[in-house]
Image (cartoon, helix red, strand yellow):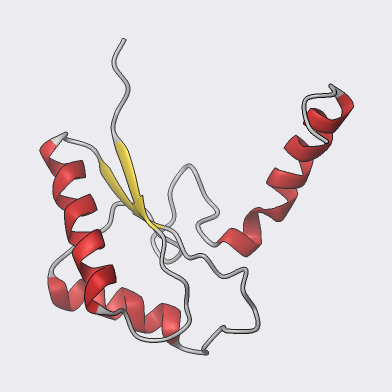
Length: 106
């Protein structure tokens, strides 16, 4: 049984997308498509001290301008969401407690 390739690009909404981020996004996009996989945009928004209002929308607009369509994102959704890190805390908390209860984390 083969599994579908899933590749993510996860910028922080701390300002404009810079050229290094664009390069990484392009590489991930091309790799995912070469593998007939999915390209996912996930927003790493847990650093609230550096959060810039409007940066997430700017990042999505940059992807549109670059012609890099993502298959899943905060705006587009998908079956593996949510796609903002801050919205996944309850998911992570559940597994942290499970690992602690099983003695697999400290």
